[in-house]
Length: 165
Image: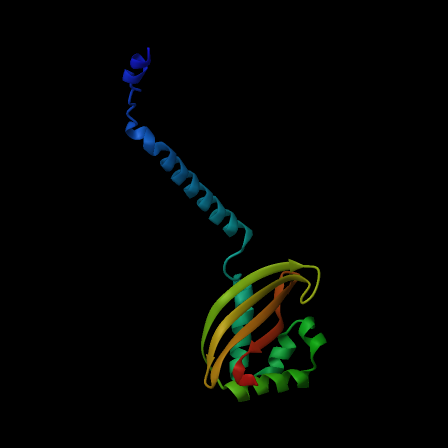
């Protein structure tokens, strides 16, 4: 009886293409998950800057570059005027110009819209950050816009650079 058991072989089953099925399934599932996560990420975030907000940023940039600091102050939103007087705004913008010189190249780094009930800017806002090369140094310029009644206005302008020290 022992002999008969030793001579019995288990049959070999050919896997054929079925051996690839688990790896193919895992690959397809991974692709689906990646596609869905990218799609969901795009739906949750608004890409680009709304045209009317971009116009406000472009106008502010032109005014900053031309030294029209009083115009910037007068065109800005109430949030700007609550934080600084006309004289303080002019002095700060002039200091940035004196230390860094004229802007030569601006590249949009990030832009995001927010809807918040708290500071720094409560309400519907847009924050656009530019990497900027000035005559005497590189900087990050941050433009914060606020929307009131369907109209965008500049609420804050902030420049970060080691050349400002």
